[in-house]
Image 1 (cartoon, rainbow, N blue to C red):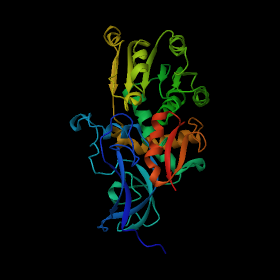
Image 2: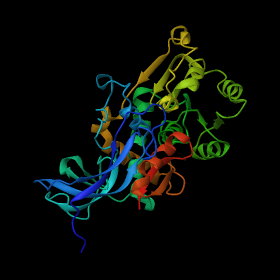
Image 3: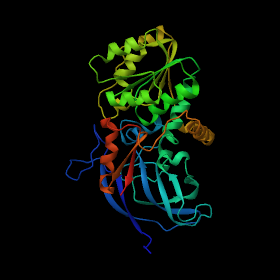
Image 4: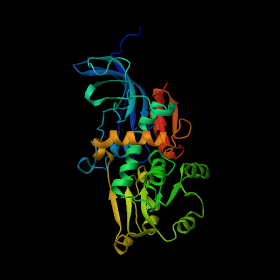
Length: 354
């Protein structure tokens, strides 16, 4: 029987990044540094977990940016010398909590570490999903991205049957759920996706989008104007930047831009410039920001609704297409996370520790 670990490798925040984060020991002032740290002994109602999977989320990037002040952020920023923040799935290997025996798979926020001692109250046991779906979908469709899609579209965007919706980042973890919720649960009359390749666009259309536009196409702006003739009711924004600016001119009077993310600018030192901002006034538009954690009290019932929607064929979620699980050595954890900003993944990007 393997000995219980007394220390763990951990990726800490060593320096605030300027531009794209770095992690190699050969980089000057690397963003992340790999260290070994002791594990504290278990106290009552705690568990020692071995991390199995990490969720890779764009929101981790602003949390390490010194330009984002703590009082203007929705989560406590990562401090220098502390583990990089991350949600994940882990296996309980030792426990003083009756409700989380050894062998339980839990969802928690251990940070980028191999092992962690966590309070039982901060761990949620995860049950099998329908149709043989991997538990990793608790990090995607049945987790933060799926909940973000639902509350952003339905509560913040006030989407209704018959509305026209545009979704950027439509091939990502959140955007791909927005497409399906809009079309198959809300009953929107038209859903237009925006993604970064022709192959991604075809996948988004297979999920139910009426059409999907490749923003890297030289004719993208003309294609967008044509696709949104008559204008649209809601723009679900996952990217910010130039596409947000374009969409301010494609919303109907009283239209809503749901401000979910701004991944196009997370590694940029240039500010977002909105040339069409005046249309917010002339068209009486709303730009509504939100954070999914404001709705976690309702998360369980929403997840159950998703489970039923999968059974009813209203949500297409598969182990092959809805997520990209990357086998990763612990020394390469930052490398896999950085794939988020390269735009290569389809669906949810998940790190599997090997």
